[in-house]
Image (cartoon, rainbow, N blue to C red):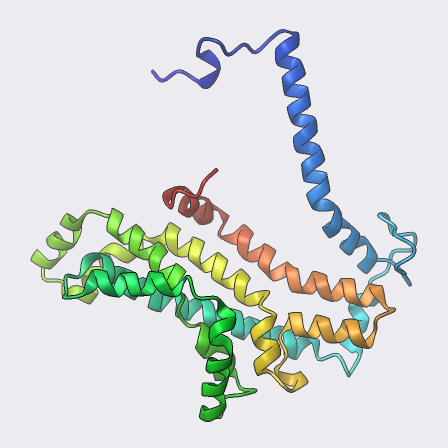
Amino acid sequence: MARSDYEYPGYERSGVSYWSKTTVLYLLVTAGALWMTLPFWWTLTTSLSASPTAATVSFIPAEFTLQNFITLWERPDILLVRWFLNTMLFAGAVTAFNLTFDSLAGYALAKVDFWGREKIFLGFISTMMIPGMVTLIPVYLLLVELGWVNTYQGLIAPLVAQPLGIFLLRQHFKSLPSALGDAAKIDGCNEFQTFYKVYLPLAKPALATLGIFTFMGAWNNFQWPLIIANDAEMYTLPIALFAVRNQYFAEWGLMMAAALIIVAPVIVAFLAAQNYFIQGMSLSGMKG
């Protein structure tokens, strides 16, 4: 029977030294958690306060109200629903395309034998070393030629696949035994059926990890939507928050309410897929 960590020699669960170390550890962890939570708590309380100002920092609302959220929905010059749907479409489409194309590319580079496979993989890896700013202007000029500026396809197309996602999934598929694919082919599966029915279900933790990172990155992406979207109706929420900040700089309650609406879907997505996310981090060797 396996012994717990507490039963190993040298690990004492009693005495002044043990309780002193445990108390200090818990105090440090609690202080760190409070420090990390403090900005979010201040954002929440400010959004729920009546007429908050930058000079009056309050961690408990003196006068509780939901008026800031109601104003965001009712004010005609704030297109909150449109901006929210734009962001959902942008982040959802980018995540779906990345999971599709990255998994197909990762499987091909890991399990399909063809000439130049390793050279193509090195080519993908080398693109990770190129700063995004270098390709920003050429990509924008290409989209101008295609007439895709200020359109949904222009917003989504440059981000449909990422070298990091291909690398992550290629390493995961490579860790799975090739005998599974050989058995499936003996049973009559072609290459795509082997990928779809055998290997893809085994890659759920890696796909969840990639999906969360991609969704969070797209949801919070500020640079690319700022460049490609010219009209207010094409804005995503980070750009909209920037617009709200400029237009209603003194209205801190509106700004904090908008910030909460931006961050809420990301938290929900993380909580929904946290089990797969932890498994994926463990399998990829990134667990601390």
